[in-house]
Length: 167
Image 1 (cartoon, rainbow, N blue to C red):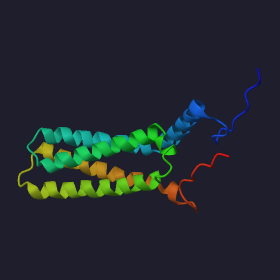
Image 2: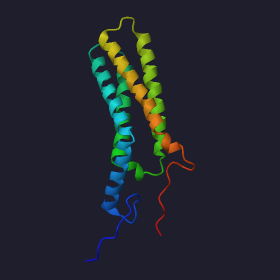
Image 3: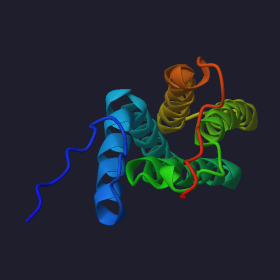
């Protein structure tokens, strides 16, 4: 039996099939978790879930519930994409740019939702104020995630290089 060829630790090398996916899964998760993106997204999801729970305790405009639900699903979508290394196989989408746009839109929607919520109520119970605060914290962490993404845009050239064509 021939000995296994030593694969480079920082590149895909000649790995194929499941071995390639396992390498990309580990590599993608290492970057996602160690650079702080995962923690920031989890804190944002926790804040949005808390805001949803507090909004359920008091009558609230359905647009606020819709806004929080929409942002939760978008956060879960990007979390799954990054955790399962799917972005490495969908190279026609520039994932750092789409994540940046998502964070900018999330910040805008949440701040707009806070302004709408404050303007639509005259009397605000404590649960309502806490929910607005949690929405504000989630908006803040969207900006923090943008700051963490600077490394994707500081280099010259495209942030994602397409894979080499097979010969």
